Image: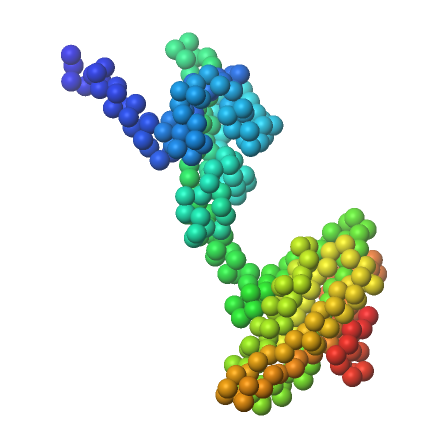
Length: 313
């Protein structure tokens, strides 16, 4: 036999490679019945290749988005070309557990997917091959970087830049759908004397205390941010002015009732903090998002002018 020809006895090497590579490999026919199911798929699905053989793909993987996957497959069958899906389009195509859950941004594996046609000897397409790549490490690194770029380091609230983007998007949404939303602007009362008397470390702890109370009390849809220094902002989608005032008032009372322990360096003193807040509701009269924020800022100024530790609208 010509040495350049593949020795048929060594085909078992190829089968071993396909069984052991760290890539999911599925071959299925036009009815979505599975013909090949490799070791990666066995390990992460808990279904053996014997059990998967000739079973319907969607019964084997009930969380696989059926209509989306069929659309992708049909394009491969019609055009005879590859189709790709990035984890940023569909983060968890297959509902597999992440192999590194303690350092991950998600308990589920992030995956890329490639589908390509398998041509028969008569150039017809009877089968599709799906390759599933675990890209959790790459995805987690990118998500962590994204979180860092959006977050204020001291408070873990959204930073001003990211909060502003969310605010402007909400402004456009309210304009487009004639919906309602409110925004709260607030800052810590008499904050400069805190820094002057106790130092900036205590000042930072005071800011962190307010931020923690905000995070613990926020609703799922609220978007809390540090606007700068001792000033904070909260975006309240689908919230009327009166309901926004109630949210701000609850927060004001909670902060008023919470003390910051200063420790032995300050004779175990308990620092009392208060905030002033202004609330403004979206209006079609605002030509730009900044007008909305300016109204909340004007309400905040009223709270401070009228004695602080209060909410104005």
